[in-house]
Length: 459
Image: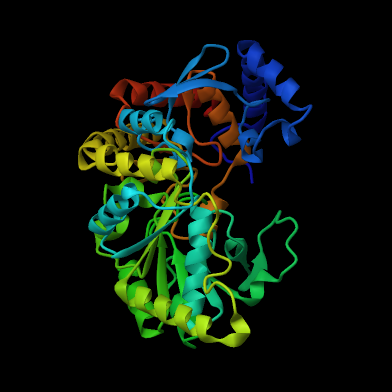
């Protein structure tokens, strides 16, 4: 249904005008986009890079701190920050220094170095779980966490929340539709029936969660402590505590994916809010923007892992490595481990968050003031350095409610309007991050551009 506070025809006209302005401002990006179509499927090296509101992708020449510059020489205040991958800013100096130093000392050997010991020690200290493994992406880490959970519990079923995001893990590409688990719309090439091994419930729905765990047959619940990819959804008071209690009662492991909610602070959301994970996953920003991820396990889970490995190794019908299906050759390579150590010790610090969190609070307050002044039916949600505005008068409680608030034409027009004024937010929804280099001037620029957009559009 057409929202009452703006006219759809006016939005179409504004979008057409801004599209043409983008074309005029970016001739070099347009040339590269055309050339890319010759050999790159979809004209980009990775298809998400085409998921922006612009008529063709921006091509980047450099990025540093809170800013990047495109090939046409235009600089942008970056509130996307690689959708969390560069959460602490582009090319943080400590990571850049060790990358330069390591460049002539080897990249990958499939053997550990001293950094592995130091990184493991720091991860244990910071996140409170004693044993760690490294992977290349959070998708990998989540896959292996699920596989371990099934191995140690002897159960097949996984439980996720409707609208969840855990990378490209097959089992999470499902939705809840009229009470039934279905494959996510647009899922390509999937031959296995994912609905047979996954249960889905709404976030914040305790009765549904309790019912889904009642048979004591679920290996693990995989969750973000705050939903972040279908529009941010905060947990109701007491929901996470009940989740932890219910999983323990059911003998179900709790896997917490903090790839996005690490924006809460240097020790993540779990430690800030007293949530105890059995398995903890972190990707994207852990190595300062280089491909790397980690997962940690409790002492109890580690002991169970050792037991099932020993059992598998002793079974003459199961000859082979007792961890088949987990691990990639480049996981925990020398390059990423050096970067991870530098990032953990010198970038992802309490001091960094002391700069990021006040800026995020300022951004949230400026947005709330604008929403009140313009009288639009929007709301804001914030988790640490992560802020979002949503097209609904009150923050959603479930993934379904968050998705129902989507207004794709409006969202795309806003993103394009901001790009044309030198500001970038994430392309998938209205999420913004503040990094240590984000300034109040950058935030004023973002909110001022959004105010100009609303002044043009709101009836």
